[in-house]
Structures are given as structure tokens and as C-alpha cells.
Image 1 (cartoon, one colour):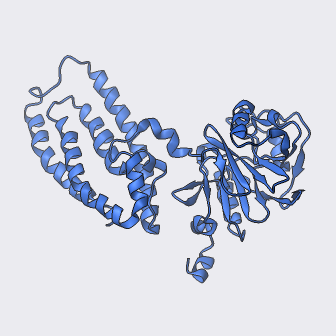
Image 2 (cartoon, rainbow, N blue to C red):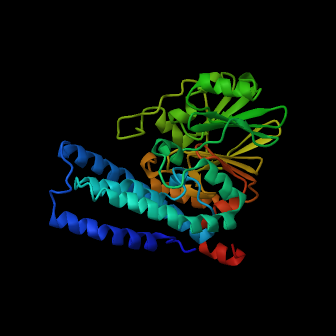
Image 3 (cartoon, helix red, strand yellow):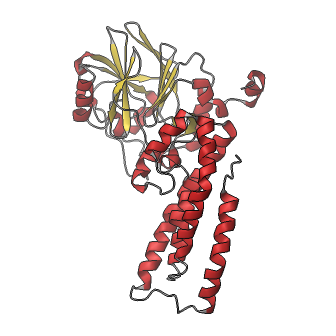
Length: 380
């Protein structure tokens, strides 16, 4: 099916239904008016539905364009709220919001009709998706509603860390709210990348993993925001490593947000790293890769040349790398430059982000960031 899906048909059917309702409202405006409720209630309710719906619609449109072009199934971002967020926001949020402004009983039936039309038209599109994506789509439709956006899940549309658990023989994740702390072990030595919001919560997750915090010898901070450095006290014996460019964020020189909010200082000794520096812990070799932008000193860590921990240098959405959310970055253009630098890395078997999970297909995930010449040469 085309990227437009059932949109034109839905618009046409809804317009045919709406025409007599709009005409009747124009000819007899007072006959169908809702009385007994202050007009401000309708204005506020309708306004909020429109304000909530339009951004979801725009973001969903961006996601589906990219997914359609690459032939992938969109399940994250706005597609975590409902399976068809473009249609869902139109018929369940924006259209009801508009008709509420007119306080007309008859006009209020328009979104009801649009919803019914949409449900009827969706059957063919859903069948197409089941045929195209098979079990992946069937699993998706069991957990995500078709049309009504699950607005209470909006935070999960942006932050979806993986649950606490073992990812492979070397890598573990410990989830603290909307962020993951990662651990890498060679069987005798264990290092950590970031340490979550809270020592108490991270301690509980490490207990679930049967990992003793005292056994962690090195802590690598991708940056010093509270959700990455908040559990530092849990690891009193670990050597702390962070980017030299990040020191300005913890010594008061540079504010994190609005020139007011500043990251907490790190009172214990730490090692300042430059791009390309290497730290060794037993058979674990950690290479520092400067990826500034989210903060001036944001740094990724490449472990044994195969596992890349990026912190908030980027996000994964629907299996593809995107720039981290601009509102939370200190320099979005620098973020994009940092991502492009990462495309030069070879041999990566696992990419781990702090808030949006991991990928085992690094080159495919980075595809849109690779130079055009390289894409032509490889045909990918």
C-alpha cells in the first residue's frame, strides 16, 4: 500500500457525511446547539484535543514516511500510542476538538462517523501489514490499540529502555526508570557505563542480576546529567572516567539548562579522557569516542572494538538511529556531526543507547547517516 494508506477514502467519506451536518448548522444554528454548559468548557476541551493531537499527527507522519521508504515496521515513537496514530489523532482528537468549538449536537456526530468509516476501511490495511510483517505485526497488534491513542503512554513513546537483564555473555542492563545502566564483564572484571538516577534503585537491579556493586572496578560516565551519574555513591571503589570536555558541566563553568540549572559536582577523584584514549581492565579494553552535542563533553565508549555504548549521543527509533531530542540537547547540530563520525566505526556487534534500547545491526541502524558515496558503493 502507499504511504497515504486509506487517508483519501476516509476524507472523502467523512466529507460526504459532514456536508449535510454543516449545511444544517449553517441554516439553523440554534436548533442543534448544546445548552446548559458554559462555552468556555467547549473551547478549553476542544483546544486541548487539538493541541495534543496535531504534534502527535506530525511526528507520526515523519515516522511513517521513513518507515515506508525503508520497508520497516514502525512500532516506536508515536506508533507506541496506537497502531495508526495519523488516523487515530485525526478522528479521536483533532476532529472532535474542532467540532467541540461549535457546540453543535449534529456536528458532534461527524467524528463518530469518521471513526466508524476508519474502522471499516482499516481491515484491508491491517491485512496488508500482517502479510508484510507477519509475527512481528501480530505481536504488535496484541499490545497496542488500533485508533485511540494511549495518551498515558506518551513518555514511553520517547523513552523505552530495555528491562534489567543479561543481553549476552558479556553485557548486562540495569534499568532505573527511563534509563539503562550497562555492565560489561569478562568473567573476572566488571565495568559499568553510567549509573542511573539513584543508588538505591540501581542496587536493587544489580541484586536481581547477582552482580556485587563492589566488584565493579571502573565506571565510565557518558556525561554527568542526573539520570546518568545519580547512583555514583553505590560504586565507592570504582575508578571514575569521563570526558575532559565534560568537566565544565560539574565545576560550575557551564549551565546545563537556561543558564540556571547545573549538574551536580562529582566530589571524588576521576580521570578525564580525551577522544581516542584507551582504558584497560583485565581483558576489557575501553576506547573513548568523543560525541559532543547533548552536552559539550558527551562521550561514547567502545568496548573491545565491538560493543558501543552511546549514552544520549543518539536514540534508536524503529531500528534506526536518530538524533537525540533537540529540546534536551545543548547543540543539536553538533549531535548530528557526532553521529556521522560514528558511522566510520567498523565491527560493531551491539549498539546500546541509554534511553531507547539496543541494536545488533549497527550498519543498518546508521544507514541514513552514512555518506552518500559509501551507500552507492555498497548498494546499502
